Structure formats: C-alpha cells, structure tokens
Image (cartoon, rainbow, N blue to C red; front, side, top):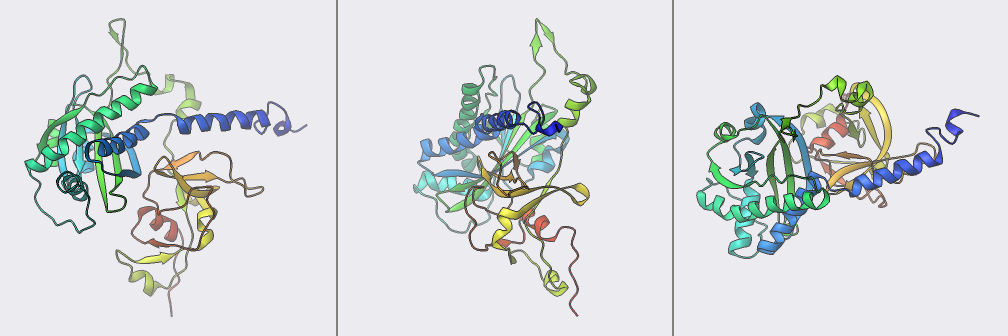
Length: 348
C-alpha cells in the first residue's frame, strides 16, 4: 500500500481533519493585529459614535534605526509613554485626524477633500482620548485571551516635530510596527494609523534574566527553517498590452481583469516558481488567499495564508465571482499581479 494511503500517512483523513481543526482555531484566536482592529473600532464607536472599520493591517518588525524611515513626516506624530514596556509611537495621517476632529465637532465625517495644513497641539489634544482608549482596549483584548499577557500600558505622551526627533526619544532597540488602513463614517473617508509597539524584554525567572536561546539551539534545523520568512506574490492575471499603452500609465490608470481572476489566482515564490493555485478573499480585515485543491478545483476548508499587501478589493473566498471589475494600476499587489515577469509586445 502506498505511504499516502496509510492511516498515519500525510494524506490520511485523520491528518487532514487535525490540520483543518488547528487552522480553524488559529483563525479564531486573538492576535495582536486582531486585538488592535477591535480596539480601534470600539474606541471610535464608544467615544464619538463613529463607525470605524479596518480595511487592512500590515504588521512587520523593525529596528530602532529604521523607525524614522518607517514613520515618515507626513502625519501627526505622537510619542507614547509606557511603564515597564518602554515608549512607543503613533502616526495619524491627515484624513484620519481630520475625520476624528469632525466627529467631535460636527458629529459626522464629511466626504470632502482634506486640505493640507500644519498640525497643531489642538489636533494632538483632540486625538489623545481616542488613542488612550484604543491602546487600553488593545491590552484588554489580549489579556482576555492570554492570562500571562503583560499589558503595554502605553498612553498619549506628546506631539513630536518630526520622525527623527521621535526616534531619538524612543528607548528600545526593536519594535513591532502596525500600519492600519481604516474606513471612517461608512465610506466617507479613508485614513491610516501607524502604531509602534516596543518589543518585550527578556522575561525573568527566579531572579535571573533568561536570555533568548541561540537560533541553532532553539529547536533544530527544522524549526528554524519553518520560522524563516517566505515572500509570496499573488498573481491575479497576466495581460498583454501594447508598449504605447504601458508608457502612458499614470496614477489613476485602470485595467480590467477577467471575472475569473479572483478564483484563478496563482501564488508564486521568488524566481517565478509556482507554489499553488489559490482563491483571493478576506479574513479578519486582511487580504487572504485560500488554497485550492488541484484535483477538483474545490477550495480547502480554511484560508491559511494571509497577506498584508494592499491588494484590490475582492469578495470573500466563498462568494461567487461577479463581473470583471476594474483595478487601479497604482495598487501595489495589483501592479505585481498584472505585469510580473511578462514582457509586453511592442506595437508596430
């Protein structure tokens, strides 16, 4: 009997059920990204009766040297004071801070153009209650799921002039950065909030500091390999266009994708290596792809690969495909998906 057909083999029914159950639990488990999403939405609703929903969340690890470049100066920069965890930071972009002010002054967010202006101490003061409530809610969400969670206890500190000055005021060496794109007022305005959480110091046991284990001793080669970062690109479709049209691309250019692109997306590793056929969708406010069984085309029972790139809007993995929808060319995910590794023929 073939190994894949035995009860203990990797393709056994028991093995698949166990894997699907574990993936379903992981999808429901409270994560920092999910806790932040819930805390932001609940704080806006409780304080200002403002409908705030998270569109995407990007999470990555950065060092103190990369803070200034990661935050940039194009927003309201806030230094967060902390207790044991150390200091953190927040950046609110102009549409988001304008929406928070409108919700407090006139009771609604207007779908009007946001005019450039200099941020003031008043802007920072009006954002402070929202930030404090969201940071407190973030700790509460994680503490409710994990009794061993140590709250960050971050709170509004002070407005900073620029990202360089802010980075000098921080104390840690490593940080977790969350870039959250939110919808304010049910589509009235789209804003971005960037939150910087300090990495936890090493825990202490019996009065002695426990240093992190060396990478090669923390679980062997297999664990280190599984913990390594892998970059995958979701390719929605491949288009062939005249060179004249490609040279005319500019922000706002729209390309139409075939209706079946959502359900026939392909996942590629570096060097154009095809990994799997997937279906594009969403999960927990993030873009996600669901693996598709190549034998019969049916999706597996759980979305297991989540992406944080700003991919174009798509229906949930189990939603039927509709008509072809235009996708803005400037979207990062769509850019790779439409033009990756395929030269466009020149028009004679």
